[in-house]
Image (cartoon, rainbow, N blue to C red; front, side, top):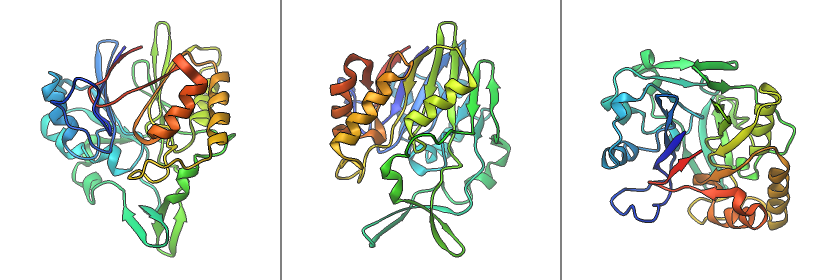
Length: 282
């Protein structure tokens, strides 16, 4: 399985010809098919794909991890180059998605207004565990055994009666099965990487997880690259990740550089990172 990072927050070494943005888009080549996991914040992922020699017109399906702009904002640009691939996602949340902090910051972070209606023929809403392509699974009922990332405390839904914390019922886990094991994709990991991996273990008992790829949402304020949790809490998370039956993790985007450094101290070679232009073979 080959995974190419079309866009992430920063550039991989040797890819000055590409453009980074705060967002995530992965192009996955698996079992003779091409799958796009998330689309970034704008059209940057599509332009990067062209520079990397990746023809997005041949994408067979798109999986959208959740309804935030930095993962689905590139959908209009994708639709301009691909006229057939369906987009698999959860139903939108009950309210509009906002980032709120310090009593003064309030910013809409959802998908482009009217997008779902304008392209309704392209969207397939999934509310239960489904095999969307052969050996490609979307899981929707994510366990809540472990604490959610503390960065979630800044994320709200604006409803008719005011703001409520986003429970992330619009988030999913994406799983691909290879001959030698499973690969798990977390998107932003708002539900918590431990919960997401345990969801996969419950759904596929006895199967081997050879890789987990995606963001873990350990960042606090993205512009400052702060950590939402303490140093000791990050160490505890890394130790718990090390105990899971996962061969290797790759992370980026909303994990944050500071959090990654702490995880790396504990996980060592079991943890890698990806940036715009990175290619991972799992």
